[in-house]
Amino acid sequence: MSEIVLTEDCIHLISQFERLTGAGSRDCVIDDRNNRLIFVVNPGEMGLAIGKKGASIKKAMEVMGKKIEVVEYSPSPEQFLKNCFLPAQVIAIEFDESDDGQVAHIEVKPDDRGIAIGKEGKNIFKAKKLALRQHNIADVMLVNNEAA
Image 1 (cartoon, rainbow, N blue to C red):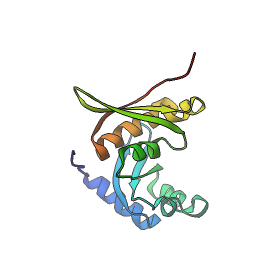
Image 2 (cartoon, rainbow, N blue to C red):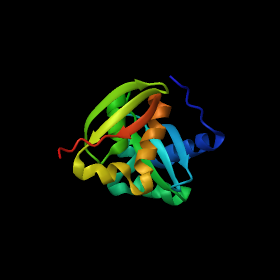
Image 3 (cartoon, one colour):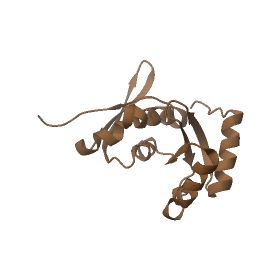
């Protein structure tokens, strides 16, 4: 598995995020393209990260001056990918090997396809980036299995 290398900026942001929300974070991605920070929180700490009626995450966004997205970590690659795509409903995940490494083929409910991709592809970008960092998955692809 590839080792996650946290920059000094990320370490500072994780510390700040943990102080503001009380949720432990194991990874941070600075996504300048979409002007957001993505935190991977420890299993079971999603509620802490968001807070009552979103209070914790709103406070963190105000203090840090960027949109913040959180994904709950799971040691299971399947569950972790499902968490990356929430609130889109993942129907099936298949893994196969390519020359570049492991590839995840994700099928979501047809109605949720737009949510899974996200505006300008930002949700699929988040899933690809985090899957590589957390589970060494080289690529994430949405498959379209709609019956004609």
